Image 1: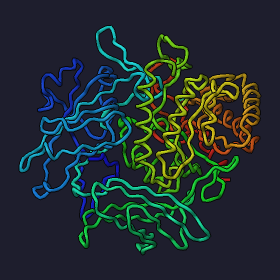
Image 2 (image 1 turned 180 degrees about the horizontal axis):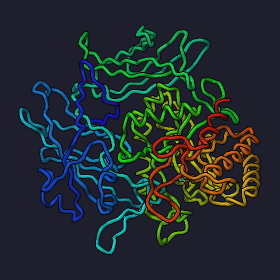
Image 3 (image 1 turned 90 degrees about the vertical axis):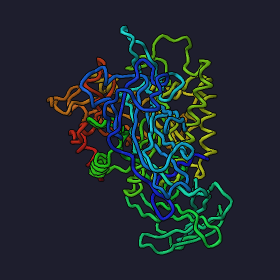
Image 4 (image 1 turned 90 degrees about the horizontal axis):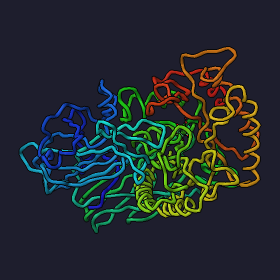
Length: 596
Ligand code: BDP
């Protein structure tokens, strides 16, 4: 069966049953679970909530920092009348990889900790009694996984993760798990793209099914009135007087796809959808042919106790805080988020730069220690071919999953890799080409470039439809007393970019200063709230000096957890909000600027 990534829904033809709750759990540091057949039941389990990161639930560092295999187990029943259906288990994400067993039979596996996967279990399930679901998960990092990192062995034999990235390597079953009962002949995927003509919109659609019967497609407005209909697996819906999905003024239709055998309906899939276009024209980013300036944040899926697990209440609070700052955009740094984030962004009219987990592709830099290296350039290593396959596969899964969200306006295909070698250029050319082929809307592709990707040295900016820069003048360089120099150097760099790439939009995907929510200092110095405000004002001066700068996504929305180290005080403190989502002084500054 094709692994459908459609978001689980319930209707007359499809059933979704939540398997969230308290599961059994066991660490497997000695890697003996397979030999001891834990697939038939864990030997000495404790309880573990799903969804959650396991990391922050414990009181010992040994458990929090655990690296290696870990197992989950639960039980479920399948309704008697469901055996004529496709019976599927769907995981929103398991970080970073999983092998799934049902009643002791291996039913599937998945690599990549931030994207969903489903496994068909018809051959393994039994009627009339509980079915055992066991997941063998693993959170090790390497140079052929994304995100990149390494796994070291400590003096006592334990494994530890050494991320090449600045966020805690949270692990676990992070998103909801569903039991799905689907028609055997079913809709497996669909896509839409849009053309606006006068007051009307033309929605081109394509539907994939796993059978031969035809589909009918209809679009309903928010009142439930039919707005357009068409039939056939690909076609066009002509929407007269279309209401467009606009930035922070979302209008959502409902697309309904019906799979039919004569008069009999075999399957139906329906979902909210918004009509909007995205284009780059010269130095402008256009939504529905109108220029938009991106205002907002780089974020993380990160919260106290929950770790990286999705939680509706946290997401709601984040959207309320973002709306309060008058933001209109965020980047899903540094990985695709839970699908529910995109659903909320669709509803709220937020724009998303959707990022693949390609982070840490750089020899040692700043806070990241990538260990002794044989090759000068990251992409020079022979393992690059394997990494490229992993990268392309996850980009494909992300684009497949997220392509229909009106909120998604661009794909970010990397964060701060080495981009100065011919190896990197060859590598990213392949990733960018693949992304273009996969997106029916041909949305802009980009990636976030750090300081060593300078106008003179970067080999990859030409691949981007708009250029994203992460810059820390005034923090990692020329901080504190040298702040004026920071501004001067920053201006000089931007002038060079203007000469190098004069006809393309630039968006700042990161700029920020670590700031303790508890610290005030007059006059402001580094780590104080006053300094964060001063730093931001410097950035605003630079942004406002160049017309080609078309967006500012500050790093970070909120303080977040990282590995421990000498320059992180219980995590990264560059949040405009604290980790418990209260505003620092700079939040008021953004609210004022973005509200103008
Ligand atoms: C950038 C990274 C981001 C870090 C940030 C920082 O893209 O993940 O958290 O710097 O240092 O290099 O705060």
